[in-house]
Length: 244
Image (tube, rainbow, N blue to C red):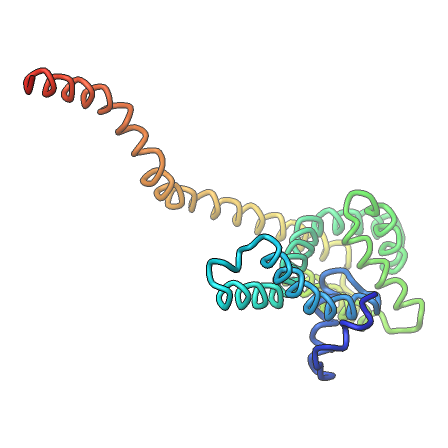
């Protein structure tokens, strides 16, 4: 169904590579996802233009309405994909400390890094499906013959999350220099939790400033109406009696 629309827009190999990377970061790895994305950049503008025609919105200004519909429809898939990437990256950030704790337990129990990765991926399949999916891909790449360091670097490139990049660097350095992987991951897990607590405190400190605008625009006018409304009514009635 989308075959006639996916080839309407011209696309260069560089652009296709960038779009594929963004789709992978959003969790869409199938080849059909790329075709569906390009088809949506054609179908969504057409759908919005058709909706503007059916609803009669073009009466407010045909040129403006159709230009707005085509422009928003063309950019809507990019915005949606960006939101999906941010949501997936947030899930990875929130679930990474739990994954590191489980990996530390597995390594201290005698498992290797590869075995611990497989076990953590299985354990987090329900609670943290995004991290489980990424760790499973790391294991599949290692089974296919790719070096462990390259497989972990690919994980950092796929997710594009700062905490994952730092974790990959820590794991590679610990593997190269022969230091304790369990202690390294435990320290890094504690560091991540400290950063999350500091970020929460920072967001809490910003709430005072953010509440100024709702207070000024919504709450203060309501208080003025409640406090001054009865007095205004009494004064209006008094003036009416005086004028009579």
